[in-house]
Structures are given as C-alpha cells and as structure tokens.
Image (tube, rainbow, N blue to C red; front, side, top):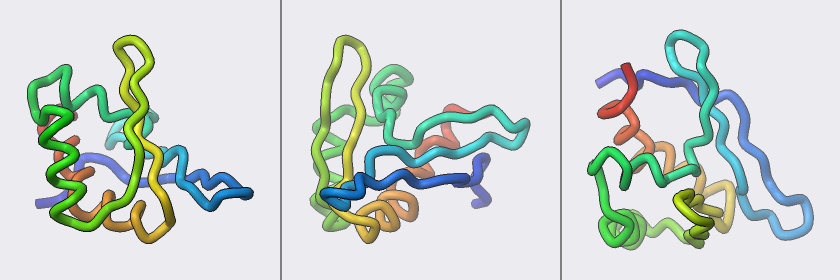
Length: 97
C-alpha cells in the first residue's frame, strides 16, 4: 500500500541524538508531525499500550510524553526513527484523506 504522506524532514537533538520530530506532508501538502501520536488514540486506531507493544515488537526505543491531550514520542536514534517510519507510521493512512 502506498502511504498517503511523504516524510519531509527529521529533527534530531544535536546533543543527545534523539529524534524529536518527523515532519511529513499529506498528498495535498498539509504538514504534520509523525511523532504526534495522540492522533492514533483520538481516532481509535491504536491505544498507547498498543503503540508500546508495537515499539517492543519492532525494537524501537523511545519515550512517550503526555501533555494534556497531546501525546508525543521522542525516539532514541535515527535507526529507531527509520523503524518507526517503516512499521508504525503507515497507520496514519487510516486517518488521512
């Protein structure tokens, strides 16, 4: 299946190497952050426990940070970002038009 988005930029903390943002754009050029995972919960695509299970399954290291209704993910390395993009980010296809 073809993704309904394209990754446009990955931001990494230069001191720690952690990936803090993965920017993507939809087919109609609307930007969003793949690491804002609260959308999975909002659209009942994946619970946060389900996300954690997928991260363990695919050996993705990262931390979930909950701020009010927003839940973001920080990934430990670029390799973790690559695995996230490959294995978990395609779930965004379920909510993108």
